[in-house]
Image (cartoon, rainbow, N blue to C red; front, top):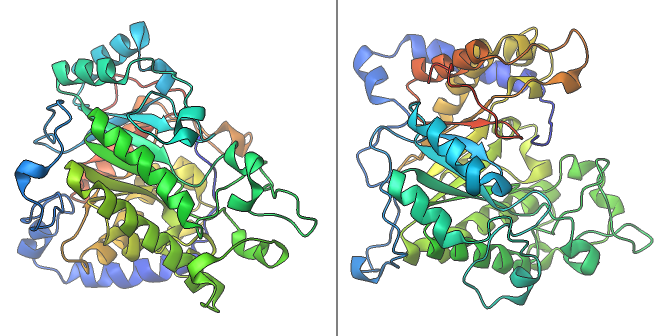
Length: 400
């Protein structure tokens, strides 16, 4: 399951109230034109100084879905053999047209062979997918749009091998989060280069969308950073720690975008929903508008189970997914319309039961419940979405 985060509702509720007032005054024409997934400019931000004939040809031809991406997460070890065929049959029996597949997972493993000379990538490749080309050729045959999920700074291996690339405690030992996680330090540019090489390898293989996940500092980092030892690199001169973290994450996304431009892929980024509130962004470095301005697609994780009670004015978020998604999208739309060009909004929605909340605090996320999230997105003018289920199990009964 994706890492749980709890979100304070006060700042969001204040923004929400303001935006509801302004939306009530909008004309019908403005409402029609403000659909988040429609824009007149080209989706892919390829610089004019790179001739189209110089865009890398992976040999895999899968166009962007005409009616927008509707995707589900697929664990890498399931992206082969019978389980892959089962997923393909699921896709063909529903409006789903895209698969999000781990290329670099939450542990830091590279799940499939990539074209690279980088020894660190080779040493951390586990080949859960034994043949990357065969996978993408199979998806090409069915015209299923492939999205490469690349976890950026979460890593369980490299920090242990070289703590200087991570964070250390006052005793000089590798620092672990309360959840037992370790992270690559986003201030260090050699870490950027490593992630960029993985992204380029995925693009060369034929993935059409590079999705950055864990593109942030650890949750709650601002509460412990003063007690840690780490390199701030080129950001040491920024005295305000929040501003330094925001600058590092923004620059990292810009760097990845520039590195991917010759490969003709789309760039998307997963963003924690609470990064849209001013009170939360500094700790993890995710300033929504900064990241959204540098990518083709933003994928906020709007999981109702991850909001505290009364967030966005909703008493029990997990039991009221329609209202949570509806109210979040009002806030996000207010930010996106300030950007030119504006990115596509392709939210992650909850397709799992959050029993970790404890008895009485959650509901079963049946097809009907998940359908309510999609309904809220559709009513907000959002036609793209991704379903997250950690074990990649989905129902054909969902009203996609």
